[in-house]
Amino acid sequence: MVLTKHFKERRSVTTQLREHGLRLTRQRRVIADVLQQAGEHLDAPEVLRRAQQQMPGLHLATVYRALESLKKLGIIDELDLMHVNGHGHFYEARTNKDHMHFTCQRCGSVFEIQDPLFEKLKTQIMDRHGFTLRVARLELGGLCSSCTAKIKEVT
Amino acid sequence: MVLTKHFKERRSVTTQLREHGLRLTRQRRVIADVLQQAGEHLDAPEVLRRAQQQMPGLHLATVYRALESLKKLGIIDELDLMHVNGHGHFYEARTNKDHMHFTCQRCGSVFEIQDPLFEKLKTQIMDRHGFTLRVARLELGGLCSSCTAKIKEVT
DNA sequence: ATTTGGTTTGCGAATTCCTCGCAACTAGAT
DNA sequence: ATCTAGTTGCGAGGAATTCGCAAACCAAAT
Image (tube, rainbow over all chains, first blue to last red):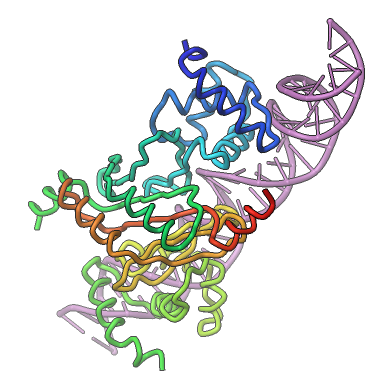
């Protein structure tokens, strides 16, 4: 069950919230769960849709406010996936393994990429500039391998 | 003068536009110039403001359309600078040296960072996945060194 | 368990940022 | 100079997000 599965994470979320003078409300809990379950980039209306299955009265404005809080705490990340469709944003739960996002501008598919070089780059930037890094978003756009092949055919 | 200074760039822009069935209109030329002169991230209303000094009748909708075209051609890049102020976007002319953007979430200042490792990472991703890379946006958020120091004082 | 006081929510209205439809206009090929 | 498809200005329209406020709620102290 959801409650047990995420118990440890939930506790730490409570603590983190508390540190910022925030409360762990039912709606924030449900919204965080939805993102942790999904594992993948959802937009705000989709988060609402899924969360409403457990909380019918939930309002979109609350979703936006919760996403904002969770983002500030570093629990979730915000993406725009190269704005393939409109100018909305996507959200995903943060995991221990940071990754990059490649969006194919022809077919719209999204690939998650991991690379140790990414970690190295971030560390190097922190060290060299004395920054405290809280978010690092590497978004890539272009053609996926399959679309690259198709384009070459035509030419 | 602007016309001579950017003549070479301008010609190549014309060619690039032509290849996509687009025309080099006076408004697109002025808008591209504004961004090349500014060298730095401007939002759409600011681009309008500056461009209107040479073209009073210019409309914001045209600015958005031009930015969209120039972005597709890879002449300019779009940024959101961690959405420090609202959810608008910023634009900058692309140079031969790609760079990353760090935004301090406390004081709002933006730093441009270059690192050979960034180039290497991009190349490696292309090679490994067979992607055709058209845009690579690495946006970082956190505390700049000065704000990092101030935070430590308080604690 | 109850009280208390600041936090958060639901709601609809409001705002911001961006896009569209269309007639008039223009770049650029012939 | 002419032709034609791409482009612009304009105001309306739309999508995404935020706001103001009263009611509801969480959590700390009693």
